[in-house]
Image (cartoon, rainbow over all chains, first blue to last red):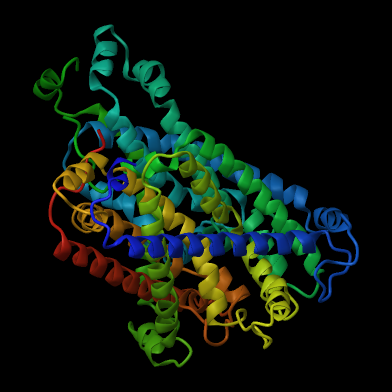
Length: 289
Length: 291
C-alpha cells in the first residue's frame, strides 16, 4: 500500500472517502443481491410448496431425485464429462505444440496465424456457430457427441494457444539447447524438459478450458442431438419447455450445475492466481531481454 | 540443428514449424471453411437473386431492428461491466489478504450459468419474491417490480454474468503494471488521482480496449437470457434469436448464414471502433513491465 498510504494533500480526502464508500456500497449490493438470487433458487429447490411467503411451508429433497430420474441427469452428466475431457485433452494436444512454435520461432505469416487463433475468441459464437453447424450437419457429425466435441474445440484450442504462448516464452531456451547438446530428440526434449516445466501452465490452461467448456452454451446448443446434450443445454431445454415440469426440479438441476462448475472453478483458483494469468496474455507480449 | 545459426545455415525448413500445423489445419477446417461456406451460402438464397437474403433482412420489420435491439442491450451492459470493474479492480491492485478472497467472491457468478441466474431472478424479483416483500416491509415501495420479462431483466443478467469476467481481466492487466511507476510519480508529488490519470490509465488503455472487446462479444451474442428473461418476441428480440429462428425453425440455412454474417460484421465494426479509439488515446509500448 506504499503509494496510496502517503497523504499528499487533504483537499480531496472527503471526495476519496465518498468514492471509497460508493465503491464498497456498490460491491456489497452486488454481492448481496447475487447471494440472495442463489439463495432463492436453492430454497425453491428444497421447497415442498412456496407461494408468496418468506420461506416455504416444508422442506423436501424429492426434486433432486425427480430431476435425476426425469431429466436423465446421470447420462447428461456423463456426456458432459466425456465432452469436457475430450475437449481439454484435444485442445492441449494441438494447442501446446502450436504455442511452442509461436513462442520460439519467427516465420513468414506468423501474424496472420496469430489472427487466425484470435478470431474465434473475438467473433460471437452464434456467428460462426451457425455456418459451422451447417457444415457439421452436412458431414453428419452434428447431433453426435463427436460433433459437439469438434464444435467446442474451435474456441478451446485458440484459448490454450493464447494462454500457453506467454508461458513458453518465459522458459529459458538454453534449457532446450542443453537437452539438444546431450542428444535429446525433439520428442524427448518435449517430454522430459518442456512438459515438466510447463506443467503449471498446462494445468492452468486445462482448468480454464474445462470451466469454459462446461459453461459454453451456444456451440453445443447448435450442434447437439438429443443424446449428446451437455448440462447447460439440457438445462436450457428444461426451462424452455417449462410447464411440463415442475419449476422446482429445474431449480434442483440448476443447483447441480452450479455446484459442478463451482467445484471446478474453486479447484482452478487454487492453482491459478487470476491476477497473474491473463496479464501475460497481452496482445504484444514483450520479448524477454 | 544444435544451435539456431547452424540450423538456419543448414536446414532449409525448420521442422518445429510442423508443430503448429495441426492447430492451423484444424482452425482452417472448422473455422475458416465453415465461415466461407456460410458466406457463400448467404449469397445463394432459396429464391431470388444473390442479394435476396440481405435485402430481405433489411426490409423485414422483425429482422433489421434486431441490430439496434442487440446493440441497445450489449453496449450498456459492456459499459456497466467495464465501468464497474475498473475502479474495483484498481482498488484491489495491491496484494493483500483480501485480494484473493474478494476475487473469489466476485468470480463466483461465472459459475452460476444463465439458467440459474434466470430462475433466481424470476423468483427473487417476482411479484411475491424476497425483494418485493422486503421493500413492502420497510414501506419503501409497494408497487409491482418489473425487472423480468423485459429489457431490464436481460440487462441485469448480462451484468451479473459479464462483470466477473471483466473484473478478472482488468485486475490481471492492472496487476501487470509495475507499482514502482506509481511510487515514482508520488515522489514527484502526484496524488492518487493524478497517478491514476497519468500512469495507470494510459498503460491500461490497450488492456481496457481488449477487455471491452471481449466483454462486448459476450454481451453481444446474448441468446439464452434474452429468451428466458426478456420478451423474445418484442423488446429483447436480439439478432442471435433471429439467426437461430431462421436456421432451426424455418430451416433456411441461407438466410441464417446471412444474418450470422451481418451479426459478425456489426461486431467487427464495434471492435474496430474501440481499437481505433485506443490508438487515438495512446501510442506506445503495451506492457508496463512486470519485473
